[in-house]
Length: 430
Length: 109
Image (cartoon, rainbow over all chains, first blue to last red; front, side):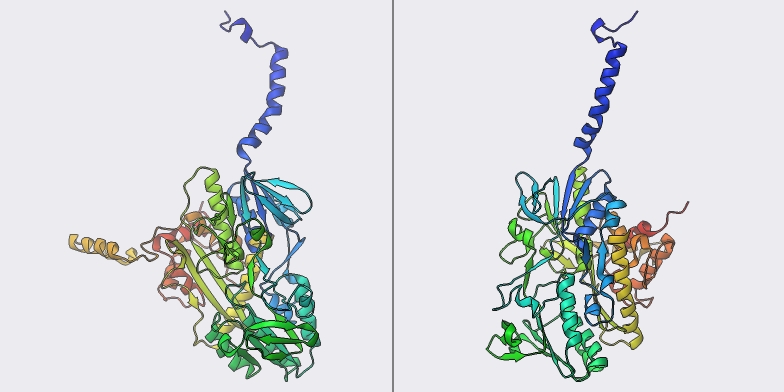
């Protein structure tokens, strides 16, 4: 006999109806249970790495990358472009692979607000994105109020050329048009800022280009600090390669620029001395990107405090801030640091959503600089999360040796370009 | 580093070894080992995705686990000349070097 109570018996019609409901409900149920929503703001070295590895580590995550630009212009390699030694097109990175191979939804828009309570991101175009976890990788913003007379309009005459293709192209054209015997003045910012050796590499490669085409040109670095990254290595190289072409005025020698006069192509130092030049590059003091400021992720320093193990914001839960915007202890602000922080944050998010305990992180940073196309130097460090924040491992890392032959410098120069090829391949093309 | 120790240790030797480990300062060797999943991803930034380098930096793809681990130990001990690998390898413990090598190597079938 049939043991089922009469009401439990399935008629053929009822079974079909149930199956139809189940077929409708199952994907929705799966979505609700498994597809956590991750939004990543910013498609630079940090954000693009995070978006990729979130999907690699957990293909069940739905990842949306918000980035205003269709192509990303890298900071690394840009000083070679500036000196006319490399085509600008090589700096452009595409988001096609992230979308097609990794299934990241790439939205070309600007994030303007974060509602931490409702876990929503509002975009300039009007769209709102829900998130379970948010990664904020907005890079830097200029402190436009830090130098008197400097503004976005003034930057059309005295470019910063520190972000974006247009600024870089403007300074490149100015340098190309500068007459022999002209003066190229670089105003270097106080620490911390994006790419610590960047201003000095810029001076080096400009000197390399001038040496061929404008041997009577001069380069003056006015610096808002006394010490700078890889100082001994740069100064050795400048002396050997360019004689007296590069002059640097440090903070203690009144090197800090406090005012600019674009109409007169003049900058004014802290103690009132005016310096005139033919081409002026103002690299202003910096802070975390706009959205980080707007969302309350920054502290009084203008940067974002984070948990050194996960890069989760100290201010807003479920939000991770990576890259230049983050206060990452001893790590320099740069592409490689952002790339390794992104991997740690992506793993922390994947683990947290899966209910796994947090991983023990390790970080790596390498900054290559070119003093000439065949003369490279590097500073490398391995970092750990400690009770004092992110600290370098004692006995490891450091700068290229002060005493090294031309072959060593040439090999580091080759590895500088090799590094660029590898990291951009890892992030944007694989 | 334990690979180079004599195979037979006296009780006294073992105790000395344990005492030495206990006395290590908060260095890479004594700190908690980094997550193997992160260690496996550490190389890609310079050596390319899955160790396939598109440029001037040597590829790791196709190298055996043993070869990678031995190379890292040689770099760490300054027994193999390098530009940056000596500086990098000194940041990792034996256990971590093994995890890097395991993560990078093509699984043998």
